[in-house]
Image (cartoon, rainbow, N blue to C red):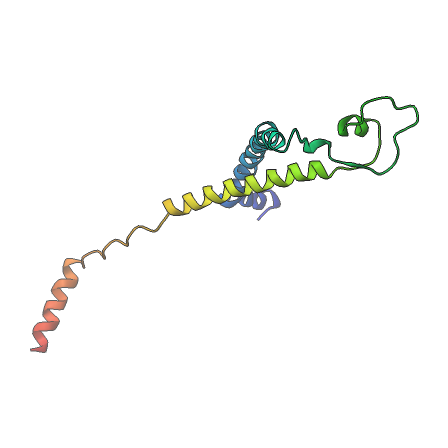
Length: 142
């Protein structure tokens, strides 16, 4: 078997194609969840905790350049090249992961519930010749 035909056989197996589709849908779904966390949940959490903005929670690991006159925000300092320990971004990503994991858990749970095995079909009745042979056997036993 040639390398290309072997690769084609591998790539066309159902599991590989299913995995590729899952990865693509997962990436798109991840963007949706990221937007939900960043644009919907975190502003509400920030409002509950008095205007808290997790994206600006960081520790500067070195001082800003002497000629830096911009705002002391995560985005501006990152662009200026200041090394930052951005634990606020980590909190946002962790919340994002928890929500994504919870949604996937619920989805898998529902899919498994729908996939429950149907009751096994009753066995097919034996063929006519088998029934006839059983009758002959039973008649000879008598």
